[in-house]
Image: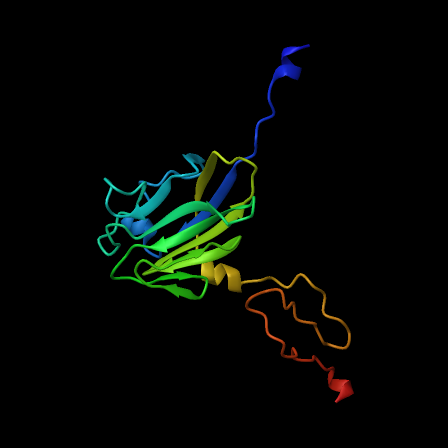
Amino acid sequence: MSSFEETETEETVHCLHMKIYHPFQAEKQVFRSIPLFKKDRYKTDEMVKFGRDNSSCKYVLLDNRVSRIQFALQLFRHRDSSELCFEIKNLSRRTKLLVDNMELDYLNKTELPYKCILRFGDYQILVEREGGESLDYFEICFELAARSLLQEMLYVPCLQPIPENGYVKPDTSLPWSSNTLTPIEVDESES
């Protein structure tokens, strides 16, 4: 047997990809202590805290308006399920945490959807979950957003050609779409 055949297969690891935004990042550098484009690995039983207190938070936000401990992320598993999920808990007494449009008060927690936007104060964090097989570790990776994540989500270039009848069927899978009809373009000769 060759050494290649004896080598164990490496398990894939669950990963949270976090795209972070603050309107004054360029001036205040609130994310300067957060490593960008680097995957940080944690044991599945670890709770990862975010806030301004560098003694208790793994990810420090350098802003006096952020709570000492703003929120925490932790991996868990539903009873009778093999799928690992993430939960988020608001640990700020002063600031509500929005997970998409669901408000979390102090000590409230919820399961993170596969893709969502976290908001508190002026902060916006787009979180995307990548599944894995490992029951021992998970990873977190950060990227800096150039513009507001809410504006970025609302800016959708028209990739679909407009049919001759002028009616475009809205994509109801998008959270910001509506079921209203779009305007119909009419030639001057047709009026």
